[in-house]
Amino acid sequence: MGRFTLFRFLPPFRLRQDNHIGEAIADEHGRTVCLKTFRLSENQVRRGHLLSRLAAHDWHLADTAAALGTTEARLGLRLEAAGFGHLLRQDVLDHYRGQTRTGHR
Image 1 (cartoon, rainbow, N blue to C red):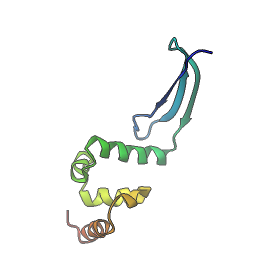
Image 2 (image 1 turned 120 degrees about the vertical axis):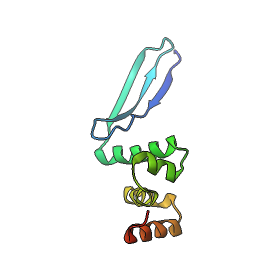
Image 3 (image 1 turned 45 degrees about the vertical axis):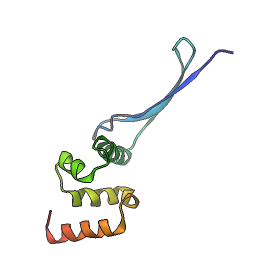
Image 4 (image 1 turned 30 degrees about the vertical axis):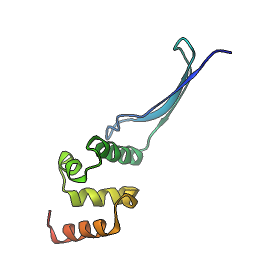
């Protein structure tokens, strides 16, 4: 039996476009012997986009917010709405809520 290698891949998380995740198995000559892909929903793409933007900015909220053209508070609340609120401390989320209610940046 030959040697096989498993490769997994993520999409670029481009908004409003088809995005697929998947995996491929290649034989010892680099030929693909099995390929599986899964199309992501728009919600999954938006969530992946947020996480990839954060990762691209070393998980720094202010830098990520600036790159996305929004405020840090709005980004924090966007993360919460996307299901990532657990990544932020409760006092930080409360502070962001207060900033958006009063219109402060």
